[in-house]
Length: 344
Image (cartoon, rainbow, N blue to C red; front, side, top):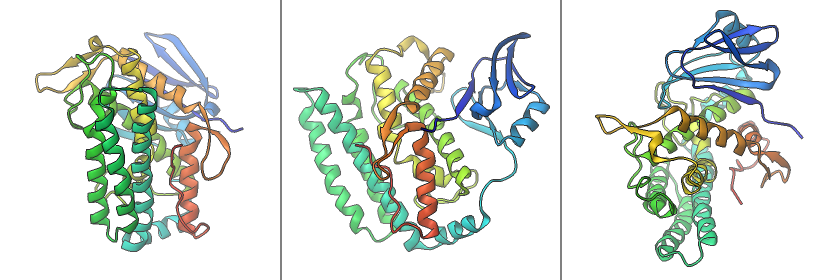
């Protein structure tokens, strides 16, 4: 069985990364703290402004198809260094034509939104199975039923604008009961509404951070199979926005990112003291909290499941690339429909 390539997350300020033979070395204050063989790495992600990467290592990573990305401490994308663009130009040209064809774009976007709604429902249903007799059961079950009705609306939808409206309505239903899924540390972790830039509560800060990790992995998977992550079908084009990566990420938000955040809160693996509130109201995670999320995310990617379309066992981290390959096959005409990832 194939294994997921590692992502090296660097969170410690004043870290120095350099090349040593065919390895990547991380030093802090001239002391070597980590050394990894390059063939185990898929990408390097640096958090903060005070991390140095030597030019020889940048060139080495570019030659070996290892991307290097810089994010702010809160997870805002700052920049990226990578080697030559990978992929088949013929596939990308078809992708661009499809993105300009409303019917072709709708055929993919409809599958993505249906998977997102289904996976959101599964999250809520899974919670109810684990919390028998929960005081908010009826409220949550009502939203589960409403989301089921929206699935039929997706199938009948005839325009991207209408589909985006359905997707927004479904997100509102799902996040409308999200706070009820938090059963521990209620005084410290409350969710009223989704706030992105900036996150205005601890739950949103965690969600945004994990979504950032997720979109980076999906972007890399799309590039590996030759697709352009910036040209999507559901999300409109916008300079600097990886629209296709955001499209595919919709399939994984609820079952991977949301469940991970809820689990860490309900198991008390993150605590109130690991967050600070800025003068603007923005909530920031400290380094320990970011490390907890990164470790939990990496461990989750190593868990094994059976892919619902291929009926093959694989690590969750490999599902991103599998979905990218399936999407490429659909665009090439090898499949009759894009089999978006439906969590079971």
